[in-house]
Image (cartoon, rainbow, N blue to C red):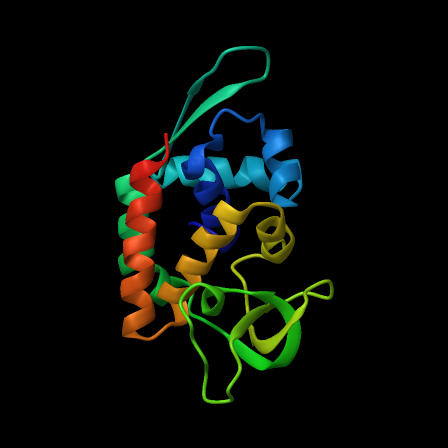
Length: 173
């Protein structure tokens, strides 16, 4: 069974970093190598990722099944990993930064993060490492924001996210 952080790993790989060794992928995602290794195993078992022999010592080729991932993100993620909202906090903007969204409180959604510079309504990220990883990688930030729009946005935000996810996944190598 997939865990939420498995989607974070799959998105990072789908955006063109599929040849990174597990340790480097873990560092980029602010996860432990064992977490990433287990995510790769679960994604492979779920047929969202094909693992094969790679070039070089301890390298493994990783091929994301982009169409299957897109189908999961567009049609299943909001039911499997529903949005959990909290109170006002400081953090990193999620989909409200890209598709202007304001909740009833007048605040945009943010991932709670002490080093964040935006006040907003707490929106629980897929994994605890998401805010730091997103700040380090703008493409990953956009992809994760799209996933959050699918999880907790209204129809307008979900339509925006669908278009962005389709563009990102079709353009990635």
